[in-house]
Image (cartoon, rainbow, N blue to C red; front, side):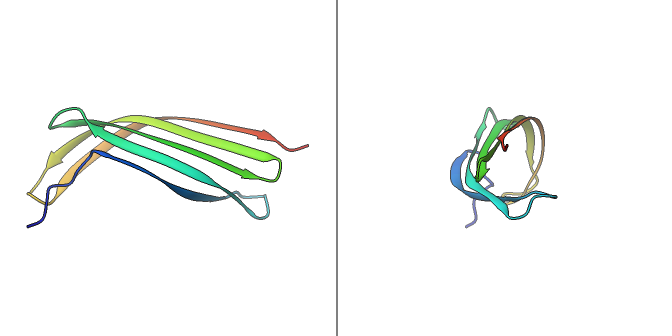
Length: 91
């Protein structure tokens, strides 16, 4: 039998950004997660760090979400995030 969608997770992995106006791509890592606060609300966050040569960039988000189970295997959810981006390096 299928389980209800879970909003409790932690994951990490490789990320790749393609930026307009810059040849090649930025490579790096990503860590994200989510935690249920109660049956209706959850918090979520994400951090990405990438580089290409002497250029570095980071992106972090944190947010609050609402979830509502439609069936035993389907949920409706929405999420509002605050984001912070930084870039440095170059010449």
